Amino acid sequence: MANVIVVGAQFGDEGKAKVTDLLSRNADVVVRYQGGSNAGHTVVVNGDTYKFHLIPSGILYPGTLCILGPGMVIDPKAFITELAALKKRGLDDSQLKVSATAHVTMPYHLAIDAAEEEARGDKKIGTTKRGIGPTYADKCDRTGIRIEDLLDPEAFRAKLEWLVPKKNIILERLYNLPPQDVETIYREYIEYGKQMAGYVADTSAIIFNSVQERKNILFEGAQGTLLDLDHGSYPFVTSSSPSAGGACVGAGVGPTIIDRVIGVSKAYQTRVGEGPFPTEQFGEVGEKLRQTGTPWAEVGVTTGRPRRCGWLDLVLGRYAVRINGLDCLAVTKLDVLDEFDEIKVCVRYKDRRTGQVYENLPSMAGAFWRMEPVYESFPGWRQPTSDCRSYSDLPAPAQRYLNFISEQLDVPVAIVSVGPKRDQTVVVEDPIHGPKRVLTVHHHK
Ligand code: GDP
Ligand code: IMO
Ligand code: MG
Image: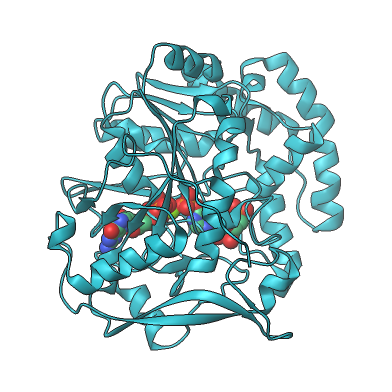
């Protein structure tokens, strides 16, 4: 038995789904614990590509229990569309469960997300416009609609009658948008409720039973540590807790049941949307990173926006190790670096204003904007890695690069991904049953 959290160690899109998919082979339960349809998780199996937004990628394994946890925000229309497409491709939904207490993304959340972004002008966050922020805002405001409400027509209507007029004041007066209609929303969403009813459950209880039956549970993170509402580059973050701690809150389990936390990081760095990105590359290097990620360029799965690209940032890597208590790393997309003569990696920051040098982020607040990366340079390997299946298959310069990452972050690199397909993977050490990370004494500089 092992209960494992797979978490994004960067700004999202690290290849979490590929790693989750690999580990799901031995999982009995796969749980999404936060976020909503802003996520875009790609898995390639036998040449078929699957793109998940709300549904845990574990659904690819028949018989695996797949749970949309209470910490998620669910757009029912997006859920039904995604599920229908997966069922059409022959996937089995008999083991799919949706938390009764997950929050529902409503039409006014979508409208407000888009309008708010527009109103921010050049201060926009660059959200996916999936209504994520406004849905979580209502949850915190205790005015949210939960999945269980869609199954209770009377209570749902009463909530809408109270809420929609308030939302219409925002839509009409603040954003000059048309009002929304209680009756139309009611009819549409009660119908969604009927279609979802068979999946709705007390998922925390199901997970607890699985724990007691010594099942293997995998917690599939969405987004990444640096998009975490509390620990990311606020305000350029998502509105949930993607980091490891969020898995316990979002799934409804205690931290004592977690055995391992695996961080997923690209061998370089990308970001979609606005916000600080110290190692971002604008010229030839950025373009080459963007175009190389074969067979797809670095383009957002959910929004189709080009991803901003840059060199790996080990200062942020150290931060991700700290925030998540990472046991090990899965380093993905090593193959994207195959054609580079020189590979740079940020090892320290220099404060542009004071000249002070940092190995660890001094603050995730304002100071982050002033940080200038200090790089170390590595010779490239200039040969394909996509066919490597063991560590010794990897070219020596690639091994040196990975060893450096592991040394600098003080965690083992347990998995190296060299292509999008399941088998394009090098397992360096067992990420789940290997020795637990040895904590060493650090002097934070
Ligand atoms: P996630 O959101 O963290 O699950 O990642 P995404 O699916 O948004 O983005 C990762 C992209 O990289 C997807 O298109 C994957 O198929 C692809 N991918 C994953 N691992 C590798 C790898 O090792 N090499 C290459 N070239 N592509 C990869
Ligand atoms: P996966 O799970 C990368 C980014 C958006 C924006 C910010 C806030 O595929 O890694 P939101 O719509 O959540 O309010 O947008 O977060 N963002 C992601 N970036 N991968 C994701 O998901 C993301 N989900 C949100 O681009 O900068
Ligand atoms: Mg993604």
